[in-house]
Image (spheres, rainbow, N blue to C red):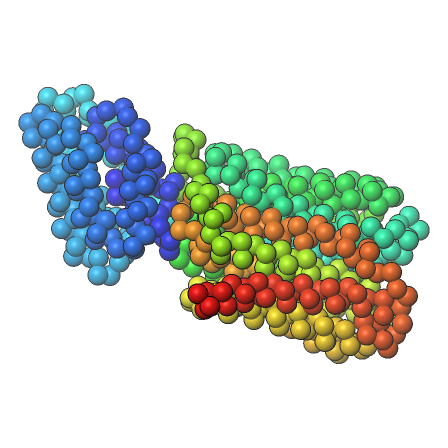
Length: 548
């Protein structure tokens, strides 16, 4: 039962414990066919939220005795022997709990559990020997350690590559947008920005829908990765044949976004299995990957667009993604064995009555409404100032480097229990003020570089705190991924609306020397106010608590 026990930062790994429950149902303690997974799961969650292993073990002996009385009375004292061996395991464990080492605890309990299985009566021995042999073989399966080890780091590195390349592309769309606006096929169409916002927005909006499917059909995660990855590449290839904005939206936008949605979240689910207590760091590193690629990708795309045009550029990108990421897919895999049955557990929707969830949601949507405009319009803004287009790519690269540092820093700080309210306030207020001042008054490249550094560092750090926000809203391990998906959905609303909003804000003529070059003034003000409003909602909540 305890072999698959695992301490997480906020309760239990439900999939692992369901596995242990099935082993218990097949072992010496239980001979009935009744499914006890739900009851055991509830008991496990309740007694591990305190993060006190000893209280859990003290209770578990009585729990086993009361829940499965047939084990206590099975022929020739088998039940008594089983419970006695269980108490032995508790005593053995007592000697090592002061150091809290999961692998060593597992080894101690494994030996005690096997000892209890050997105490079956002789009359049941023949009937149960095949079952016990199978049980022993399964127990011998050693899970990889969490938060460390070659397997955990290998998976995180592969996930880093996938996000860097496939998520870095839509985040570099500002370069494509500037190029498309100069082509005769697309010139004058104010909905070009929708291509980029749809590609990235779908991955956010679809999160709360695809995450439950991944949990339900874990066995098909790798198939989902292959399908989504292929759809991304096909979408790019099809976009190279487009000559209208509408078809670009369907291919480079919708097809690419849906493909990314399908392949990315299974990878994220695997990351969650390996990274638990250091998940904030892992998320920060993962989120920063697109920033790392963004330091080079805009330059590369700009060179290809200037030399070969968008059609050849898109085909080159498709081939590069196929070659660089395809061979890595076979190495992707989770830490826990796949469940042979569909998980019966359901999320606890009580978090919808938690005011903190709605506070974070409003803040997240507000931040998402303004977040994407600088990466979309800095290249165009540079051109409007009369500067060379290569400086637009330079600014995106500078912002990407800052994003790497910001997301990793905020992720690590969230792991170290720095106040979440303080971190989100610093992120949103600083980036909002930077947009209103540094971007608004910028008439030269140096000030725009400073803006890209400040905005990239502080604005990008916000998403690295979603994991911590999720655990602050609910401690239920089943519900946490759903809350995380809803935070993605909230930002996706802002992402998708960014295109239509910007097309209606850019109605002025360019006037170099004016605030925001006059044409971009409404866009800059909207960006700054949206970011700052993201912190106002948090401040109002804390003020309300103080008043009470």
